[in-house]
Image 1 (tube, one colour):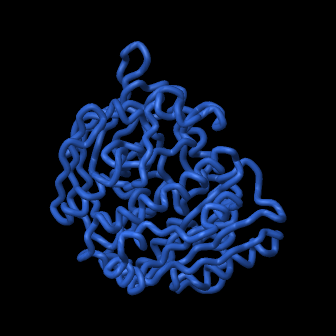
Image 2: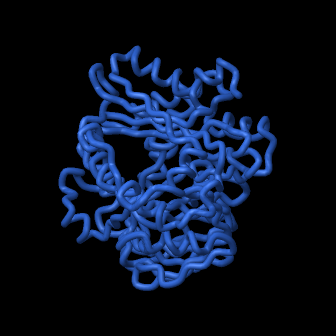
Length: 399
């Protein structure tokens, strides 16, 4: 897919991202997991080789193929859906880094599976996610993920495989002789915007667009984050709001492929922080099952804006990792139902106990589902004292 030189650049960027998303770079003797889809085998090998060269203990895990996944969800009983392999908790409690290489050969293979069965697996694995979240709060764990082009992704995006790969290369700066330097430059620009947003001290955010009339409460002791190294590419600036202050309507004009299903034209209605109504032009049953997954899946876990000046992504890519970073003509806004990001807490991470997290309105869920709107929009912040200021318009922050 990519020539050897571009593949090597990709591996360099991913290892940089693992280091960038932690307080200090990975050290000799740390433990890293490389998880990958089969089509990304060459990239997995290149990433693992770099980690081994640095003295990092490296584990390799091949994801289930779409056929294996379909067989599992068709035949598994309740015990199998909730099964977590022995030793999983111990492994996660020792892990220092994880890189996930996405390269799906199918995107709608689970469309005929009861969504409740898919949700059961997500709930069963949530304790493992909680372990990694705690380790990340302690500065002991970092993660990143990326995308390897496949024929299935290109077809669902309506692009040739060659054009799809070119979008990936351009978005990840792989067409640059020194992509890591480009990402470092972008990180500095993001830091300036983050400092500006934090300095505003907004108490409310209002998003106005076609089909969107949404109010979000950033919440106390929050900070904006962006380009943390967690996703390659990443151009968004985001925070985890106080879920209790969400109200109004939201429309996702971008389709979403999730859990082997396609969901299109999602509309959400919020009252007192919860989704009270959910509709979709396609995939509504799956949407409703996801919203009802657990006690936090009907609440907001993330609010995000992407400035089009940072992102070269201008096509639908049929993968949330890219679609949530869409630049295009108008940038994008996305919200995520479900789990929040504790890293957007402005205080010391060790102080964010479960009780403190609850009191501040950080949401908890086995779900985290990003839903993207790429239309023209205006985002207005209410500042301390009641003054209002437009902070995002025409796809750009107004700093």
